Image (cartoon, rainbow, N blue to C red; front, side, top):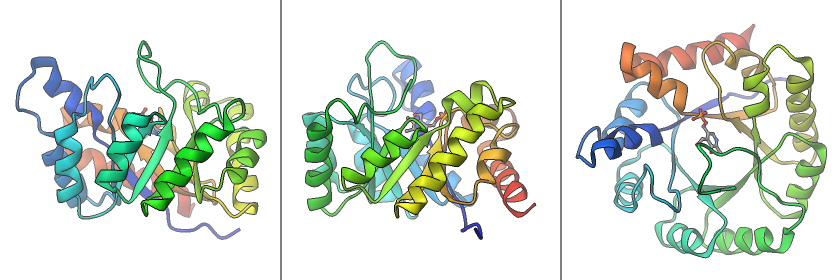
Length: 243
Ligand code: PXP
């Protein structure tokens, strides 16, 4: 299969994490989004968590007004977030699982045991003109269930791969799930735990059209600047894609 162009969406949550450490005004995630766009990011991702530990309601309002590329809001599948999303109307909502005590999004959505809850959410968001993606574990069962739930896109959780990038099992699961999703007509996104060092194998999967990357880019930005960190990630992706 000929690889489609691959988009890089930057997750700017951890700019807000730093700001919230002081409950101060800076650094501003909206300013970060604009620098990312200037450095070539194809989209901006932000996760409004129920506990508001980093991104705040006012941030998503401002991002919706200021993002010039594409705004992907990550949200839990709960009434409060669905209401905010339907009012805000970002171009895309990625539904993610959320547990208050977790440090970050630990696994994919449980779409098997509560399909009607997810299906209702997908319908409500779609009716509001929002494109919906489901953040799922890289398994055939999850991909096939996503198709049944009526979404146009899925995001494959790359967390297991990022923890064991040299195991053929973790990358094969991503390759196989991506292929199955594309065969079913789903757009394939991926993300979590990707870094310049491990992004290559994932970027090279031809069906994957979009990567969502946050922590490693914001971390590198502390040392090399945000503009450089975004450009370096783009370069690493494109080198893998074209080799
Ligand atoms: N995709 C989803 C659905 C996420 O929840 C996250 C983390 O917020 C990411 C991608 C980005 O992960 P990381 O910050 O590890 O790059």
